[in-house]
Image (cartoon, rainbow over all chains, first blue to last red; front, side, top):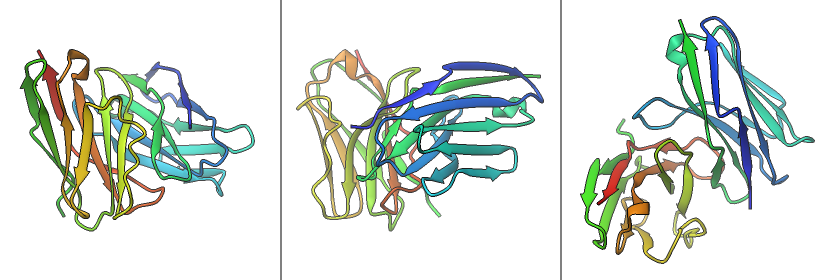
Length: 111
Length: 113
C-alpha cells in the first residue's frame, strides 16, 4: 500500500519567514495530494491540494509543488503569521480514493 | 449548509465495554471515511464506504472494530471489548467520492479506563 513520509516533525520560524514542509510517497499510481491544517483541538481542514497533472499550485501565501518523477511534494508558506501555527498533514490518494496521511508537522510561528 | 457531525463528542468507557460512535455526513456525499488519531499522532485510516459498493475495511486494526453505513447516510463505528490502546479521537469524513477534498467532522474523543 501507499506510504507517506513527512518532514520535519516540528518547525519553528519567526513571523514573516517562510516555512517549507516536505513529503514523499511510495505509490506511483497516487494522483491527488492534499494538505490539511489542524489547529489544536479542531478538525483537519483542507488548505490546498494538487493533482498529478500539475506541477505547482498557489493560493495567496500558500503554494504546493509536486515532483512526480521523484515522488515528492512540498508545502510552502510565505510571510508566516502567528495564526499559521498548527499541525500540517500531507496526504496522498491513489486509485481507491482513500487518503494515506503523513505523521504531521507542528509549525510554530513566533511573533 | 450543515457540515459533518459526530456523536458523542466525548465518550469515557471501561475496558471491556462496547462503544458505538456515530457519523452524519454532508447530505449528498457518497463517500464516507473513518480515521483514528492518537494523541499527537497522524490520521490512521480505518474504513471507507463508497455508495453501495462493499466497504474498504483494510485499515481496521482488529476484528473488534466494525462499521456500518445505511445507504448514503449515517454511519456507525463499533468497537467491541474496548482496550486502553483504543483511546483516541475518532474522526469521520465525507466527500463526493473519488480523490477530492474530504470534509471532517469534529471527532469523538474516546477514553478507555
